[in-house]
Image 1 (cartoon, rainbow, N blue to C red):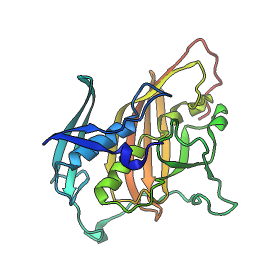
Image 2 (cartoon, rainbow, N blue to C red):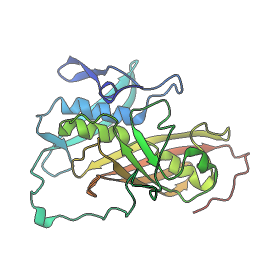
Image 3 (cartoon, rainbow, N blue to C red):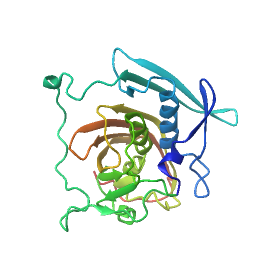
Image 4 (cartoon, helix red, strand yellow):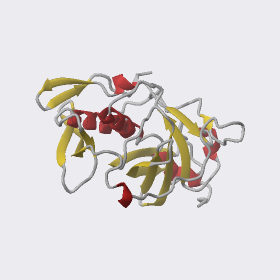
Length: 266
């Protein structure tokens, strides 16, 4: 398993060019992990702005466009927006958020419905995942929604920029599999009739800083699936119930039309 530092490791080539030091992938898959590419793009962009800048959408911002290239082929482009970090109590009287769902913390006694997933993420990405259903349970059709807790195994205190890179890395964990839940399709060790499932567009809005070394609730739902495209929305809450980030992702799904699947459960 790669460590979180290895997953986010960059080697500087020149003033604005960086290379990854460790890339997640094989032998399980020949493809790179999209979450790592997003996180590495953000980490590279952070290296070109002052250390007190954080990722945040604002009308008064600094932005960077990051182009990810492998073997002279364009893999991904990322736009990162930054603002200078302000104290947590800045304009505190004019703040509100959507309340965090009332769910139990992982490991909160025998009544907690969340179990530590022994499989974790395929091919050992450094993240602890607590779920209410293991992947084998996904063979039963269910509504296109899931809640899970994510936590970074490393408890070393990091700066805000590194913490946001970790959240960006985790922003692609298990999002697309919610799209096919209504059909009872598993993603780990997928059946033959699931030809393809991948993310093709990804957005992360950072609202507040969060310590990824403590549990983060990820509440994910797919609003619709049509023409092989599913739109997924996910909200990330800190352990202290603050809304830390919002994620939107478009996933591509290709299912063998010759297979007879169960009617979707919505």
